[in-house]
Length: 194
Image 1 (cartoon, rainbow, N blue to C red):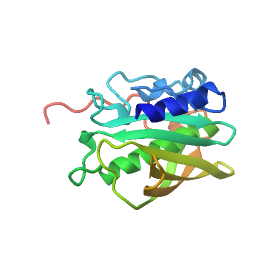
Image 2 (tube, rainbow, N blue to C red):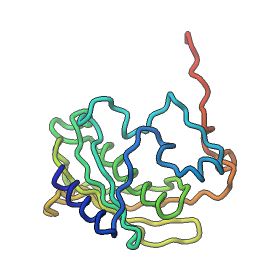
Image 3 (cartoon, rainbow, N blue to C red):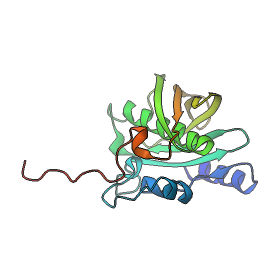
Image 4 (cartoon, rainbow, N blue to C red):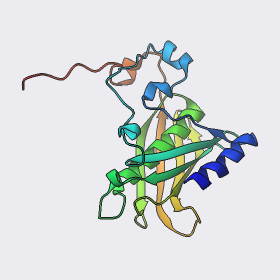
């Protein structure tokens, strides 16, 4: 993992790639201008789904690198043991999650506020827990507010294809989050005593 991280960090230093910052709350990833424009408030009870494990190395361990000129992303991903499906392998849902997160982060970098409309995955080979894989995706085309992506999950050496995927994201229009049919920035408190 460290070798791949350092490889992409060198490309960041070269100026063609940007490393996306790691974060534990989704709003930490949203630019301040957009937070203010849409009056988005951080709910201190919430935590970003991929960073919902307190012990490092047990869940989603990853770093994302974006190439703005090519509109593509590479995610260095190492599934921890909390992501087990079949014994010894990452659950297919964790593969879908890291693909969606990689596509989504790319879409945010390209178009700002977006939502997943469709994610299609063809699983090819299971991912061994603790192995390091590369999740790559790129923007193929846009049609109005629609953004179309293709991507794949491969072993670091490129010899093993774990999954291929396509995704459609929709760019949100309005400045009012509630008119985009989004959840309110602060969900209601859960009922007690039920």
